[in-house]
Every structure is written in structure tokens, then in C-alpha cells.
Length: 213
Image (tube, rainbow, N blue to C red; front, side, top):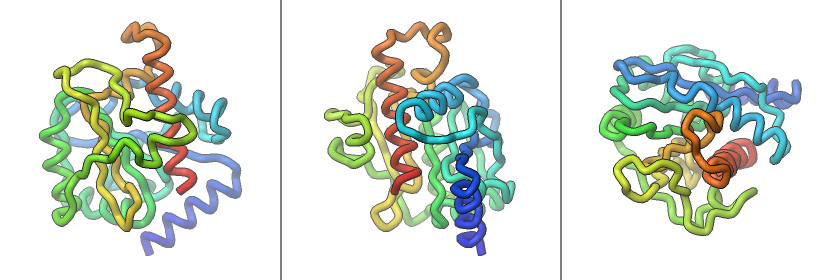
């Protein structure tokens, strides 16, 4: 039934020639609302450069809400604690196994919490690091070294981790990278133009993967 509802929502999106994405509002105390300008800027970039037709303002969705199944792509970010209750765990698992896609972007300090919570969602699955030749780094923009480094954080290399289902990424976790900061308005972090462009292009690759797999 969940799969049917998700596919029905996607069919409606295609018929109306519009796509919607959403930010995840979660519990636990972390700032789920971080980077408010990031997704609108990414949407604008994608609509101009890779022929998407995403609605300009992302929605906000809680994992317990049945409307979750209306969005082919959901984005989770923040700095602090994340907590999923039993209903959210079940709903998120069904959403991802039905064809949905979750992008988790560590805005610094999220790692220990998100690994704990995603283990509740998929006890039998682990995050695996994507190789630099993975499709998500190849088109429409080429990243020969894999995930770009946008912000320093702990000075570690940027890594892209994934939870897979039948060779399909269902959850992408970008760590020590902070794509969302790179997507934000230029004056917020004063990132150089080339850094912001890298972040936007990588974001476009993610959305391209979601809408064209």
C-alpha cells in the first residue's frame, strides 16, 4: 500500500509537470531548520541548469506524516541531537524502501546521532562509503575526486556514505563536507564563488540521481 501511494504521488508530480522536495523536521533538539536559504538556492540552480521543474520553496515534513510519501527527495541537516520515535522509524523505512530518497548533510556535530538513528531504521544495513567513480559523481557534473570539500569542520576529508537497496542509494549521508552551507546565500558564509559552485553542482548531481534513476 505504501509503495502504491508513493508511486501515485510521483505520477501526480509528473502529470502536473512539477516536482517537490522537503526538509525533514525532526525531534531531539537539533536545529533541523539550519541553512534556510540552501534548498531554495539549490532548486533555482537545478531548474536553470539541469532542466528540473522543482517548486521554488521546499516543504517541511515530519517523518510521522503520511505526506512524507509525496516527496521523492527529503533533506535532513543540523548540528545537534536527532531522535526518531517508533512511528517515524517505521514510516521512514517504508518510505525509503518504496522508492524515496533521504539526503543527510552533516552541518557539524550530527554524525554520532544520525548513525544511531539510521541504525534503528535499518538494523541490518550499514553506511558504506561511495567510490569516487560512482554515478552520482559523474553526471551531469564530473567530480573526479568524489565529494567536494566545502567547509573545514574537523579538517577531515569529505566523505559520501550511503545506505543501499538493490544497488540503489536510498540514503546519502554527506560528512565533513557541508554542502548546505555552500548552497546558502553568498553573504552568509562568504565562500568563494568557485566553492559555492562546486556545492551547487554536487547538489545538482544528487537531485539528478534521484529524479532519473
